[in-house]
Structures are given as structure tokens and as C-alpha cells.
Image 1 (cartoon, helix red, strand yellow):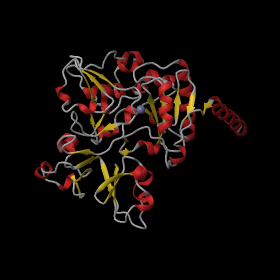
Image 2 (tube, protein in one colour):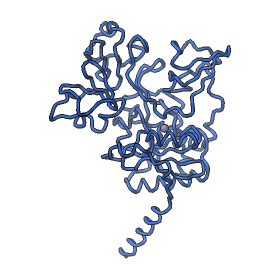
Image 3 (cartoon, rainbow, N blue to C red):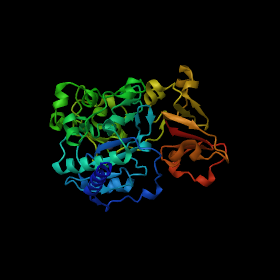
Image 4 (cartoon, rainbow, N blue to C red):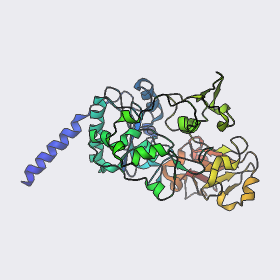
Length: 400
Ligand SMILES: [Zn+2]
């Protein structure tokens, strides 16, 4: 009996493996520079918000996902599923930051509020099934990018908030999950519940977690909102462009016909009603976040919101000295000089010593472009640092 069971199980498993035909034409050149993950507890589903003809090239060039499924259901391998892909950006789930370090990321060529093709549903269900099997991942840990992405404070949100992205939002709908053989979904946001984050997008929270019959029964068509890229009362530039609001590629067309890019706008709250916001389709999934600068990006309060005096908010003054927000009085915050660099949601590691290298301090993240080394008063990003020449005593700032 046992042998029979084993034989059947083996057969089923073999079939499951054989279902997917991978296409390797967009296998990322970044593979060899990506570390092997130590753990895998989540599968993160994304929507490209762009057609495959532009999405695939970009995802491959940047190594931004493990798999991509095109409109016809073809599955492309981008990054080896055991290695790290940079797909989640600033992210957190259940108190653990940097979701890239413990997840597999799948991009589906489509939109966060539109139905997939039947072929996409089939391929995605097969791929998820295979990955769940390999990594022993329960259904409620197959979630969307919208579940895990969060934003640092900005002009609209005073605290770190969920809602930085709506990417993959419709994968939370029970009707969609059914088609992917996913029987459960997270009941609530663990990081909002623990007050690590606040809700930045009430509508998104409703789609992700509401148990009301309307949401449970809804198909993707029910959450499609056409023509929602015009600023009106109750819909801000952030609501439309999210973290790309101040990007140099995000175009604002004012009612008088004049045009400005996101990096040319000083006060987003002064944009008139009727302004159309166009986010470039091929903008990075997760904009590279770097430090912001007092005087250039606003006051400390504009940059760090209610987190100006947090332990995890770091200020690097023009003289090259750094201080934590928690070490400053409210008056001292106001006196931070023009040109002070601000990092929100960061840990401090170090100092670097002969027996304590960057990898021992922040693991794989040491060479990430949003990890910074304070070398002779200058913040040097991890991807620009020469690991053979990091001076002893250097401090490392990395996202926590
Ligand atoms: Zn995404």
C-alpha cells in the first residue's frame, strides 16, 4: 500500500514538474551577481502595468523578478529561483523587512485591476503550484506586491505606510485566488496591526482584507477604475503616481496645457484640480531610493514626517558626521543645516574591521545601491564601493 502510494505520489510530482515549459530567452545577465537566498517563505505576485514587449527586456536587464508570464501564458525564467531578484523594493511582512531576501517574485504581464487571460491563469497556477511544493509555502503566503510594499513618510503621509504600490492588487480577490488554487489569504495586515506601519491607501486595504460579500464575490472588473489619472479633490498626485510622484519621467499636464515633470514641481499640493498625471509605463518597478537632502527635498519634517526623531531616521550633516533622529530635540531637528542628507528606515552597522567585513554586518545587502558606506564624510552607495578598499572604521547604513 505504501509503495503504491509512493508510486502515485512520485508520478503526480513528476507530472507537476513537467507541466511548465520555460523560455530562457530573457534569462537575466544579473544572475551571477545575485546571492543565493537563505530562506524562502513568500511568493510575491506582481503585475507589470505594461505589455510584455517592453516589460521583459527591462525585467531581464535589471534582474527584477524570477519569472515573467506574458499575455499568451508563456513562462520566462529571468533570475534563478534560488537567487535573489530585486522585485519588492522597500517592503516588509510580519515585521521582517526586505522581502527580496525571503521570497520568489513572479511578474504577470497585465494590470493590477484587470483580468488575466485564461492562458495566464493556467500558467500562473502551475508555476505557483510548483514553487509551493519546492518551498513548502502555504496558500496565505502567496500574496501580492501591494501586500508587502511600504513607503517612507512623504508629503502626504507622515508615517511609514502601506500602499506604496497597488501592484498585483487583484491577486487578493478570492475569485482570482480560486483560479490559482489558492484556498486562503491573509486576514489582516500584520504590520499595520502591530503599528509598525499605517494604512496609506484605504481602498487598497479594503480590497486586500475586506471580508464583505462585495469584495469576496468581485472579479477584477469590479475594481477597474478607468481614467483615474486626473487630480481631483480626494485624489492626489501620490494616489495616482505613488512613489513615482516626483520622478523625472512622471509628466504633469496642467489644465492650461503646460507640462512639467515630477522633479520640476516644488509644491505638489498646489497642483490644480484637472491636472493629468502620466507615469511612464517602463518606469522601474521599485524606484531606486536614495537619501534625500534638507533644502533640496524640503525640510526634515517634509522628508521624514512623524519619524524625524526616530532611532531609524539618520542624518548625515555636511561635515560628514551622522546622528540618529532619536538623539535630537525638536529644536535640534529644525537647526539641521542645509545639505544634511536624510535616510528614513535605516539601520546602522559597523564599524568595519579586519575581522568584521560588510557581509557580516548586513549580509547580501552590502552591495545594494540603497546601502551606504560613510567614507571620509561621503555616503558611497554599495554598488559603487570597492570592497577591497573600505577603510577600517567605516559605518554602514542599510534599510531595516
Ligand atoms: Zn510589483
